[in-house]
Length: 499
Image: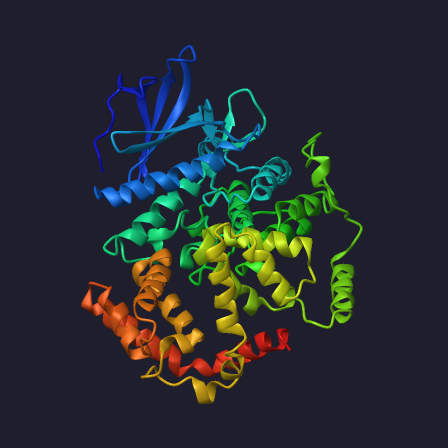
């Protein structure tokens, strides 16, 4: 990591460094004064690629600029204003509005010290009703925070509304660049994951997948900590299951909402902040002391449908279609999500959600086409279509009959067995990271399209410099192959979509 910038240094002939505010694995945060805005306080966040390679630095700068432009579009009173991005001497900076206040981790500590008790149910309800519209705002703009925690929610002095700070978008892009460009950079799935253990959703920490519901999970963790005054490791048992109810006495309706937000499986959680907001209002039997938090009118949805009615309507609509909707096949959605992620990155989950929200009964082929249109590069869009056709349509018969097609990997072409390729990619993630696993397999097949399964395994093993880990990767593929019959059921479900 490069040296710390000394107080008194002028960055970009404009920002005067006053002091360092914090330091982490991604870089440092400084308090600075904007000399062109009458000395107004601001925050400079410095992101440091852990490399000196010109190609990686160039790629870092390109993606950094692109993601900075996304953040620049955020205009919300509870999010610090994104003021600028800049580079100086190969250093990357973003400039943010300075929030003069305390984060909620500090506020909770003070509450426990002074009053001897954490936040009440009413207070946490009010806090959630203030925070949920912020999540809905960013999710509507296809932005996922990725790093929600009490440390990243602040309360400005003399104000009552919490502020959401420190988005993980730019951090994630930098780790993806490093993971993709440098195979020697941390052979772990965590090299491309942004978030905090305890706060982050299981899918985010395990495989780097992040959805709007992942933010909802992290917000619920924060709420539970405010309620109990206990940290996540105290509130989980040895199997990492949440056991927080015994630490607090709250209404059953509120507890059910928090438990649904904390569901381990993403699809079992609320799928939007708007849903949680409405549920909190509908199930509230307590006065919130004049809390007037609300979503903009343009974001309101009808609430006169109960969960049972929604299920009944869904079943009725399904029966009226001759082709099974993709929304009823989670295995197919997961497969499409993995493929789309390799083209557009983590925003894939948001694109899929938006498409399903607009057309809940959409059929597989129309779903594929709608997503292809979201890939701006026409050539890549066509490649995405081709991949789904290659994997789903011609190979369904083989997928549905695992006993005849899935053997231990051998001497037939790897590309003819898409499920084998997917297994390779999923196993490779834990050794080289999410982004690199896609790149390595893609590059190997682009250079040698006729690689057999055995040859592909050997090629991928060569990309893992630790010989022990390379052998472990091979053993994992063998192990999953020996249990592959279970994939036949999944294949049959996918096949039914296209019949």
